[in-house]
Length: 133
Image 1 (spheres, one colour):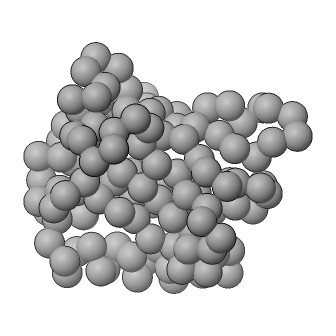
Image 2: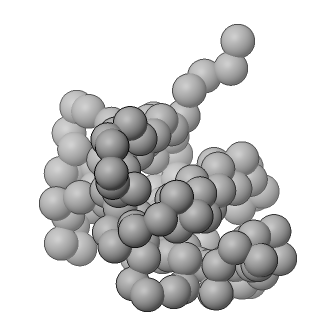
Image 3: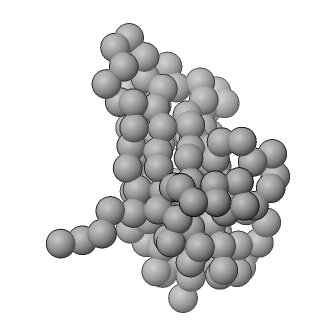
């Protein structure tokens, strides 16, 4: 059985497409402990664009400082994103001391917006080992 690293939340709310994601703390610790160089960041961004280009304008991920921990995932269209809650630039592991890292979506008006953000999160987690090698 594989370990659950991330979990979408609030997908059931009728009439709304906004949702949340919980990210495993241990996974977040591993990612924040690794430096992300610009070459790997660019390769990941290119891969995301190629994988979901028909669904989004210019999808990309923003990372916490120069680490491999994603703090914001963007569709690149209309200010639609999924971001870590309550951090205001602070280390997410210091904000979420004993619980999963919480992300919330913003300006998600359609299920297509939601699908793109879920796909970006899935790519980020699925390819995390390649990001930190």
